[in-house]
Length: 250
Image (cartoon, rainbow, N blue to C red; front, side, top):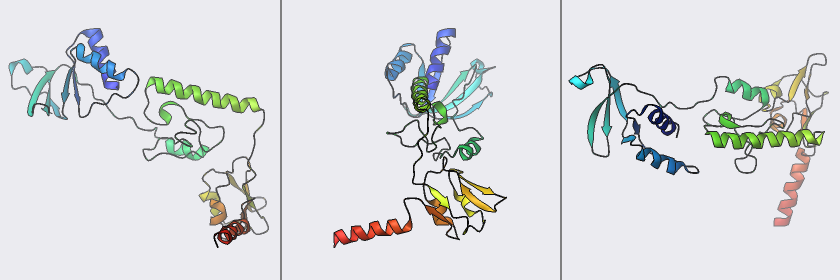
């Protein structure tokens, strides 16, 4: 859709002959197929095939001073040489270079492509696993203008709803450190995905920030000294639940 929009703008402002080289044409979205048909009516030349090279090596008089596009036209099964004045590359969209540092700073997970990931694609599309941090636009992945505006409005409404509450509700199921057992090995600091644990140098112990902790239990399992426990989700409680389930099955 980016390349289609640019082709329309060039055609509309200059009247130039425009070629659009593509592999598969997909126009998902409201009125996007109609926009593609409009470009066909404007006589934009769509050629299905991957461009092999762009050179300035002319072999015909009409190619002098031109850029030569060599491309296989898969619809007719032939290789074509097309002289043009300008070549515009349609490049891919990728995350910012500091996306990993930002994700670590705010405790946000990322997708396989490196963009920030939402808490749930259907139920919480603009929220993250960190309360008060919301996603909008291309931070979450490649988006067009209508999608970006819609997501920005949703993120703004979520932020306003949180501010209007006047207080933050914290889940009671979080981790806690028994400072008498803590050996200050700092293992929990490296494994916490929410950066909710800090090392207190004066006391030589680790402490959990209740507002940041999500009760995932990673630090509980990783602590070699057994100094960290999950409130309201202890090993004894889990074992009791398992025993209760097995008793019902029997």
